[in-house]
Image 1 (spheres, each protein chain N blue to C red):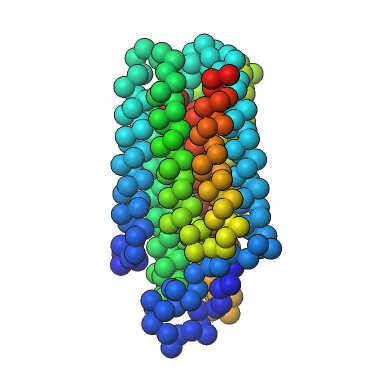
Image 2: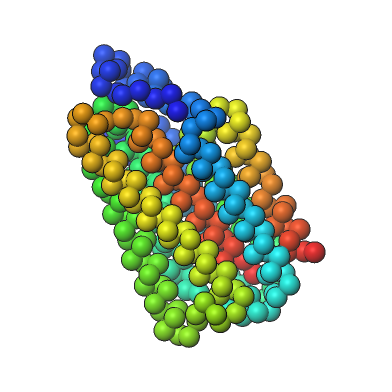
Length: 90
Length: 203
């Protein structure tokens, strides 16, 4: 069990779990009516890519990787929400 | 990756091994080229989904009612737990604690199998309710995206199985191979986080 709590992986996992439940709560609060809601949509997308960045940095250890990998992964994380926002809005 | 076999570093402390064997991804390393390519292919697919969602908003919103949010949340949790277990397996490996590493690798594979069974059960329920690939544009995106993702999970399970065999065989142990398998598995988790948000949670 010691390795589960070695370093930052346990707090990162706990944070990812809490944020996942939060985004589920944000969305399921709308469940009965299922109305279109761009704010809710963008909130859950932004939360998802923030979680993705933590997976990239903490579990995939991209933070210790070479510069090209850090830059490309950050381009993906930073670029995806605005691209989706534009696609949902045009 | 610049990792070396941990057996050659047994005179170092676990912390030193951990630091020394952290990957310094090589630009020519195939797995990272594949992972970054896969992320961008899925990313463009997510944007295409958002465009269609915008164009057929009522259809997508109505069709989304066929999805079971409970299944989606459960599958997300299972993959998050699997990533945690695999990170622990890698830490054990870097400390040359191979038995423990093997156990956490097996636990990760168990989570992956739970995901596969859960996903197939979810599809079975949906198809049973008449929600099939050809129902509408949303269902095509949903079954295609989750199907391709499930293929990734199955490939990931194969990679983990190979990793487990290597961990059990003292002549084959290689932290670099383990890091590649782990990176692929974490990417599978990462992609699901976005799929869950886009398919199940957006409104």
